[in-house]
Length: 253
Figure 1 (cartoon, rainbow, N blue to C red):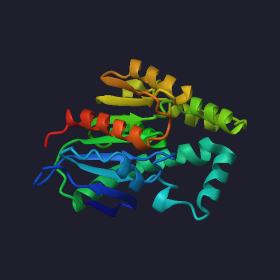
Figure 2: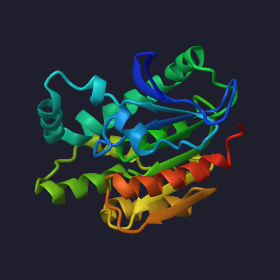
Figure 3: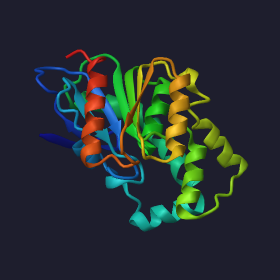
């Protein structure tokens, strides 16, 4: 049974801890902009049902219950104008900024134990997970990312190839891309980190993930055979098993 709510303005779906009476640890997850692209879809795709922890799935800004007034049409228009400055930068910054207050609000609403929080994210959501780990505003026990945006600039290049467009870089957008380069910022990642990639994902995802794994101490890299970027179907089941295995090591029921 899931719980749907709002925590300090952030929409969420929460799944109750398995086999726990009383307070339990917290795992927060952010969804992709590809499938699964809402908090409800992410909770369905990666429920981590065997974890003795609250699994809470936050909605990203501009998505799901916080979709823009013009819906997908407005979102894609903004992305076409400047994906870095209009979408990836502001979405990640806002989601990371609101994280501490949202966690505090969750503690007031749910029976969450004291102690560090674990975080996870997919694609655009992985940027938020990386960022909140690096910031350290909330103590983090462990992290996991799937189809991760470990470096933003290569992803923009991949979108140029995918959509047959040319992105015009500015000084401001280059600064944003440099900030969201977690290979460069590897020494800011101080928690155990699981990095899951699909063998059939774009090299713009796979190569930075591999570089991040080499640079981030305490990280593990897992490749899912045949998986592309989306986390759906049988691929989602395999990612769910990897996330469950990973977090079980760092969560005390």
